Length: 285
Figure 1 (cartoon, one colour):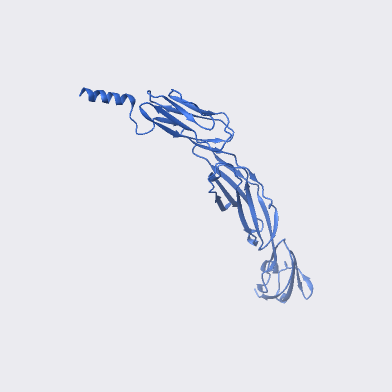
Figure 2 (cartoon, helix red, strand yellow):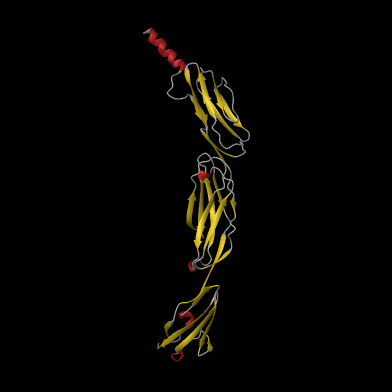
């Protein structure tokens, strides 16, 4: 019974652990490239031969202390995996590795495709170039048309070093988007240990040209209605429109009478020149 009691006391003194008896504080760090970092390796064990840091920068030898910091004044590398190790005559040597994320701020290179003039049906590729960013797997690029999200891209590259990713958006010009304004936004979410970074590009302005579009060939309207409101001519640039009847200019803002019925000619001068004959029937009120 006495020996069992002594054995219990001995085991309690040296400690029996299912895990490594050291803690890293904090257990992970997110640091901007070129800045400093300090992380403490701590043990509550009193009977040990030392703790130490193994690292490409800031490594230490084995020191018989209970708190040992890993400190680097300026992080100038990208792939850090510093490890704190614990040594004891009564415990198997063990190691805990610090999770280190090094990042660089986001920079967006303006697209050379800004302020373009397109014809309806044309396509254009807009580029959002992200310059020298890390870690790219935390990056999200979002495209907006006005305030509406139209595309979102993420990146699977697991490298830790800076890269130059890009996002591409293809726009097909339509008259419904005559004056669209695009922009790309880049976000890097490094939480919970680090910041959430956000950068927006300048706006990409595009003008879509189309028409002139004369949408009618036969129209019926009541007396006092006008040709302009019944058969508008659309286009971008805004077309110069002439209405003629029997070869004479006719003001399309004129309220019509029954005797104004007949064949009219519309001449629209815009992106191209368009001429069309239109049959007009004026109904009684």
